[in-house]
Length: 257
Image (cartoon, rainbow, N blue to C red; front, side, top):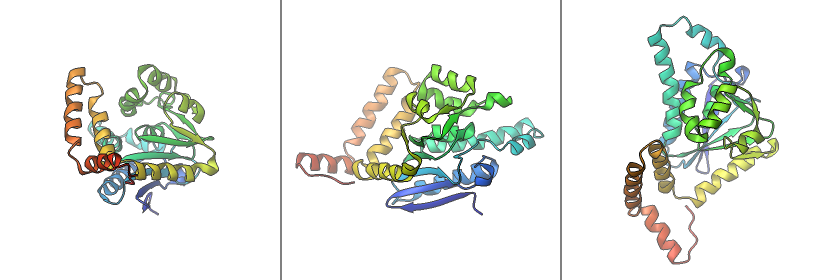
């Protein structure tokens, strides 16, 4: 059985964690399969938006504890190589050109919550809970910390990472970790409709350039960020998407991307 599934429909690419018997826990095989799946989906020209989802009742319980236990026998260099694989996956999702939506049908815990955190949007079922529980098993949420501070700020990141508690989907939405909370039986249709709206109403080039600029400017000195933004602004004006969009607007025509 494939531990990561891929499919596409109506310009939406679907990447599915498919290890439900292990609560979609992350191990080396899963991390490598996810990295390959995102790279493949990014290369699909007809795919405009990607949905990351999971089989079973749990989105992801984080690192496979049996796998973590086996890693304790590794050397530092071996463990660093393993950490770099997870780093590459998280960076791939965060930096990739296409918008990524996490469809969270069940609990997203530790590394599983980290996967959701690096997506551009998170849509959650009401029953799902979120949390970074690493400190409760003597581990460190090191990699996700880099992204979470960017996303929520220092105070919220400290609350979640040092507290280690699970929070409800509603609480996650209130602090900015989740974008939308819906009933479980509406999750699939809501996510599909949300992705379709992005496909139809937003230009692919605009979303790509916006994502790339967002990733670059955080933590950069003000005037350096402004110079980068000005260059992006200038370059965007000559793209076919921008020319087409402005022409349609001036002509009073509705544009469908």
